[in-house]
Length: 321
Image (cartoon, rainbow, N blue to C red; front, side, top):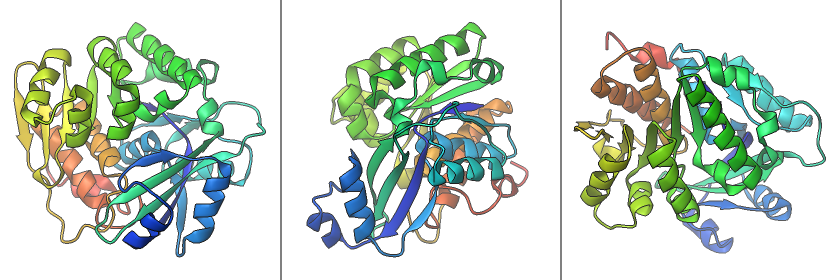
């Protein structure tokens, strides 16, 4: 599998609800910020953990943790954070395709505030990751991968949109599957018409959650949104929090329960790792309900600790399943 997304370094820190109010943060949202705001928030947080991140990057790392082969395409600078990002990816077995050249714009980072209820509020400085263009794609890697996985956040910049479309063209030209994650409901609000067109014409597999699906179809009824999805998409995996997930096809809707956890610590990366488990199952020929179960296993592991990457080898959690 090859993933394409915003190559970011995550800065994750716990904070009280009052911190969100003090800095005017929208709880649960992903907000794009500029350099000065990134510096302000970074300086105000205590006990921060720094690690390579980005939605699609988390997913490909999950694939590697399951024992699968994964590659990642994303843009970083030749600065310290760029080096950290590349090292982290290669250390877990992911082939990192970094576009050549250095740039004036720093490597991006995402400041993630985790409140006591485990909700994460993300403030993203895209940096050079937003300059990803079609010229930066490794088309050979895309053509050779069973699945192309792209994050909805890419649609926040025109060059990245063009890269998205080109990558999908290359994948389909080689009979590969194209998958998209909706990323978050605010992202869907910004790009609803584009996403609807993609789901109908270019995307073979859609990932999202309950709120994202409601936003995509502009309805308050989850059942209505699922029915519209069945008409427009060949395959979708929609997470519904502690109730597990729905796997949606034109012919059926399969409900898969969540894997229980003793305590939810941090929901950062839950959707990313769910996608990793589902894709691992799909690319190894498992039935759809097993794919959903693999996704739930991965999501349960990552929400049981701080950070968007698994702390154990996910393949060790599969048992005989």
